Image 1 (cartoon, rainbow, N blue to C red):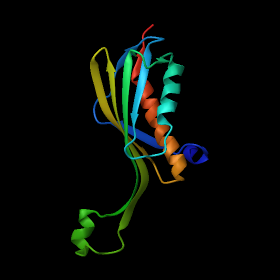
Image 2 (image 1 turned 30 degrees about the vertical axis):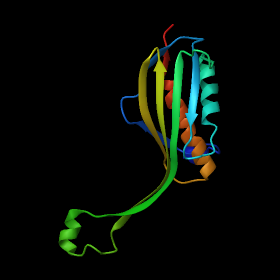
Image 3 (image 1 turned 120 degrees about the vertical axis):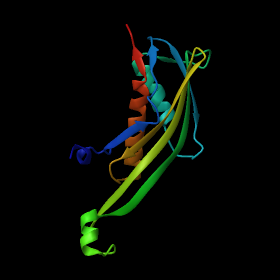
Image 4 (image 1 turned 180 degrees about the vertical axis):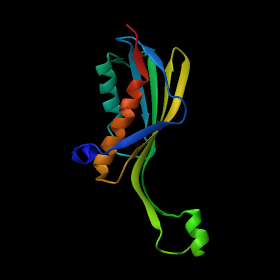
Length: 162
């Protein structure tokens, strides 16, 4: 219910294709973001990420940065499908696989994929992030929600040891 009440974000989730990225960071270390957007999605992801990392205590710099962050915004897709739900018992009793009294599972959502590679001191860590909304809503709201999930995930890659 809270997702419906939020005027900005739509309920969403995120997953990585591996265990993720772990970077021990220190305040005032520098970063540079190199952003590719082959899908031509109108996005402020690069600027929002820079702001989020600066809020963590890192500094943006193009000259010999501690972290080189390569982002590739692969795509944002709308998914809609329906699948008939059936139990094996009802199939054997009814013997009619086309019976219309079965229930349908319907899923409608947006997904966004971002590939990320972070280089620190010549060592590279990479992952692919796939965020998805729980349902369809206004495209701009869904994109804002997906980007927020991605930004929070990237920020979680940096942990500070004081």
